[in-house]
Image (cartoon, rainbow, N blue to C red):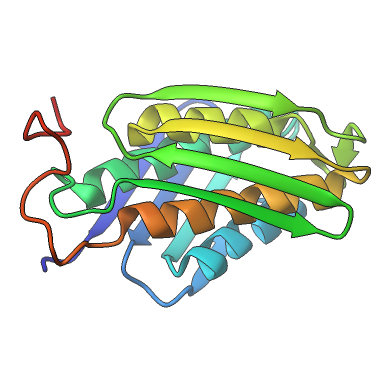
Length: 197
């Protein structure tokens, strides 16, 4: 199996991002975005998905957290898309439910090459630290659209910290399942013979 890795740099007037990803990692994370709770979520994303992830983001946090979170999602999604290549041999589909105390998050993913996003739920508080809670939904959407995923998410709970953390963990566990190699399969898991067109 070839190495499934990607290095992506993105620079705009709003953010400068350098990101390294290894899909077949050990869960190592080195993350600095300037938003403490977001760093915590990205570290959990790497740890629970067993992805190696390094992120450096210099964003316009003097405005708010939107551009930093959105742009990291864009770059992370692009890195997954690049690292997966033609998606040959992957499991492709997965679903996970993850609880965190009173909160439960559900994720269903198809690593289809056809980006779609659906979300059902709300966050119980508007902010967790300097992280705007609804940006968790927007992160997942931006990630899905750039990674070429069909992604369905649901979340319930009473504490936004728990709700968002459960969501990130469910997402990364589903991604780990869906991107694993199926030794029985040759080529793309599709009757079309491709997931890249």
